[in-house]
Length: 322
Picture 1 (cartoon, one colour):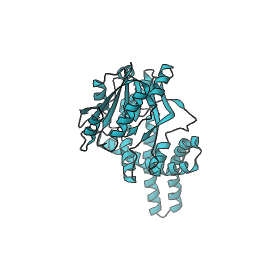
Picture 2 (picture 1 turned 120 degrees about the vertical axis):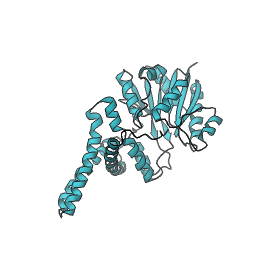
Picture 3 (picture 1 turned 90 degrees about the horizontal axis):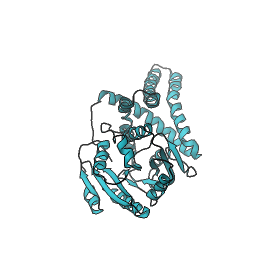
Picture 4 (picture 1 turned 135 degrees about the horizontal axis):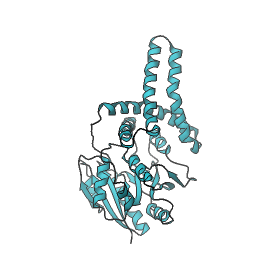
């Protein structure tokens, strides 16, 4: 009988961990596979570890580690032929494992991930930001270059072949991990025939901006790991250019040239519009396009600030967040 080890990094997720564990176990039962639940706790101060134990999970106490190290520690004690990595705030659908194991048996791909949706009560900016990476339901599967680690499923051998997650990355460890798997020949498949729910959505603007600032801080580390490439450099350079243009526009405005300032500001608005159009075109939703336009403009500036800060504080470390 197949056995899947489900590894869940966690930090102060008492609100969500019961739902996450229940759904994961239910999916394994529906697929008819043995399930091993492993929660790797990063030093939570809430009741998350106790709740996880009540649901039958093995809880590893690992305070102070980065997110890649948490996932690796879980994999070290895992005994399944299959490894699944999910975040502590993700609710997997009932047919998650059933569907993906069928795809694997059909030799469609090697590493799988489901698209994410937000619950109905999520604010508009959290929903719009989630939708930018999802596809319309008519596009059931898609081979991709990399997968996010909110949920991943693979045979143990694909984890071992690349030596696990990079333990030095504060964020972006999922992109690094699956890019290395792809370089080894793994076929990565994004599936949205069934979707997972992301309950850890941003509940206010401050949280959304803080998360984006944190995510964008990984660019310098990815460049050092994978070498200089246009793919990894284009967004940091674009974001730094946005800051420079904004500074020039403010200077022009203060010098009494408002028309010049307006033209310069357009140079930062247009890239955000381009990103919005590219991500929303498949949804045919003008409202989503406008929402993403504003969000991408903010993200451009956050990314520039994060990249500069990472240059200044290269050795800074912070607790990982499941």
